[in-house]
Length: 171
Image (tube, rainbow, N blue to C red; front, side):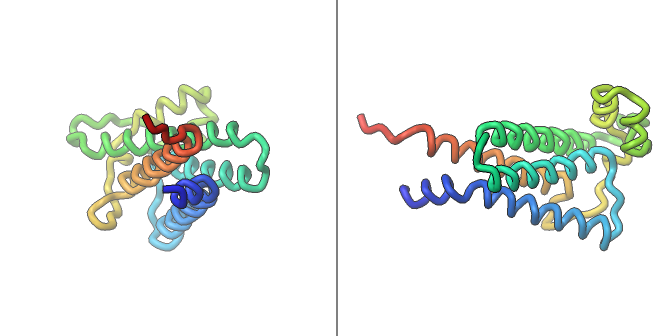
């Protein structure tokens, strides 16, 4: 128990940074080698992974303000997970219930055309393009794999928090 506690306590940020780098490598492969074009919800997930990578990389280099980096990391992970969940939901809707949506509008143009939160709402509204399943690995598609990444990293951070802050009390 103590060995696991020490490993999680000291190497959690390195593990999260490494896993985010692996996911970013996968994103690069799917976009540039396989040739998949990400929809707007996919881009939110991509940017969330990149944010997680940068946040925890900076946290490892700059040891001050660890709690601030943890909150930023949890926020980026939760945001990415919410985009993944929304895309999985859209993929499971019948085709006739999908809206025209804003996934066909380029991401940058959408954020230049509307205020930030309104554009974000339009991205989360999704469309039939966001519901396309163009690639799968071991029976899971891209947003499902992204959700596994986000959920496992959130779980790892919560386990670390519990191990560091709560000592095993014997009654």
